[in-house]
Length: 299
Image (cartoon, rainbow, N blue to C red; front, side, top):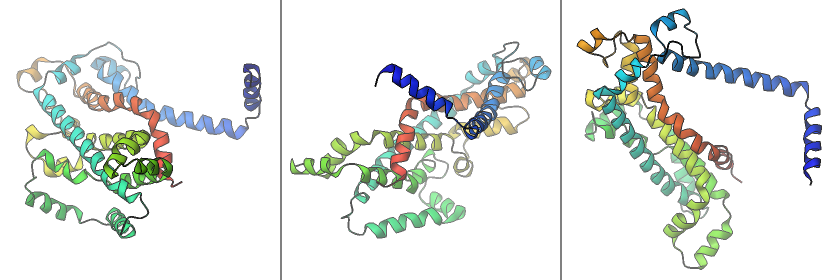
């Protein structure tokens, strides 16, 4: 097909667009603008002076550029500790979660696994019912994990939803490749590491993003299990900053000598907290749709 024919077909397709298509696209565009606006407003507020914010609280473009809030945040030992704790929890939880997820999903993807239906029934049961907050709290205490970062890692290592997605993806892979590898003498571990995983990058990238975002944004478990301020995560710091009249990032003489407003500090903290995930997502989004579509439906 020549380039002229392709352009002609694209023009024909454009001419055949119905009014319903235009309405749907307009609604999607409107929803996108509504979702993007709060981010732009927070960024603009964090980088603008208080006078500019008073003049236009709904700004989307910074005015009277002022980066004092970012300088105050980045010079704080508290936010540095929170960053280290959050990165540690996110990285360790994601790595452990993906390893355990693969080791659980691969055997379940084989129809000849003994007791497969029973295991799947038990897994799905845990999605519908759990021991509740009190039981989980006593379990964490008895395991000696209370007030430890491991209390934020261990309970969320396995996700039944992610196991099902990966299992379905493995089942959709061609059996001929695995059979050929078995004929060549490969065992189950070699099949998983050398054959299955290289073919499963879309679902691996997707679930890695799921785990990373989930643990980075984890808030409730940190509130329940962490009491030591030196073990705070960014979400606890963000909660403290938003709820407090005067943020603990600025204390003593620093709070008396600076013109930083609470509003700017809150907005800057939001930006600093969300920035790492926003930066990582574009590198994984190309795998996102493919991984979800292939993992959600058994082919």
